[in-house]
Length: 131
Figure 1 (tube, rainbow, N blue to C red):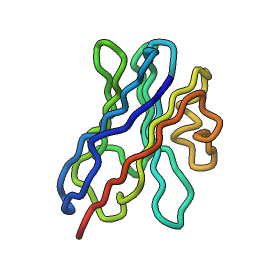
Figure 2: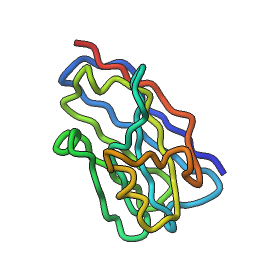
Figure 3: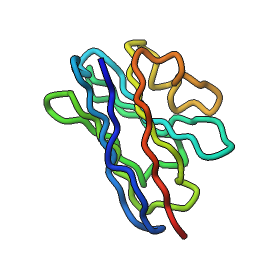
Figure 4: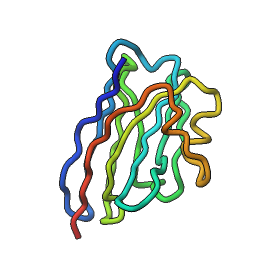
């Protein structure tokens, strides 16, 4: 079982990127999938989460209106569309999947840190936003 992120890179402030999180050997149908990011010198934080069961979505307040999480019909890939990017969005972005019912609430919580205990975790991909 593996999660692989792709789509990162360098973009200018105000630009857009779409990240992908692709699962191998399982589908997201029975999982909640979160996107996380970790900037240099900072704790990892969750930014968005989607339920593979019913498509329910939650966002961290700081990315609402700029980031959009979605999944494909086959439920093997989850996307994070990032628009109007800012230099402070620079970070390593990772995805993770967990079957816990309250996982998405933990992902976007300012105090919870569920990444390390998630059922499955990707390796992460760099996103750099230049000013």
